[in-house]
Image (cartoon, rainbow over all chains, first blue to last red; front, side, top):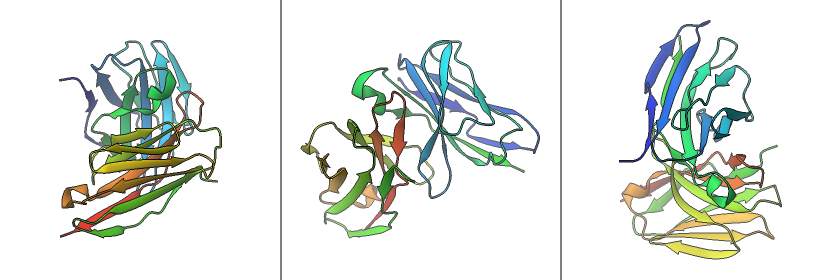
Length: 115
Length: 111
């Protein structure tokens, strides 16, 4: 079955540690995204990528980094520079271009807690 | 300044009734509009997309768009307990990749 796989589902981190969240898709989508969701808030865009080896900052990119070495994969690293990293992280993908860029398919999410 | 506004709810709806959810947006150049459903603790899933003024129906769901008023709504007919969730409005302002989400409206369908 086609879909998006995020791992781990739950992650605990000590302050000062970097962590990497994995996102893999087999939908053959060109575009991939990382969002952050905090309680009572909408989704906020961290990074997005239209094509392999290219990515763009979203609205809240500070303290995060990404790579897009393969079409299927878009890992997110939460660095120690991110001051408030506890959140629900969502990876998504879509077809690139046109109205379809708003039709996102989401992974199950990764819940990060900083101890 | 929030670009996509929704009432947070909760919106309590008796089973079998119509749930009406509203969303306003600030970018007059927005071209495409989406409704996502998110169950508690889960990820969002797309339930409706609408691109032109008027109504679009899909099963028990109807999306309504009025670009002049910068307003998009979602109607859920014959509401079921399984419709209890948070509904996120999302608006594409035209810049690629910049889908803006509202904070969501929580719907609670009571038996």
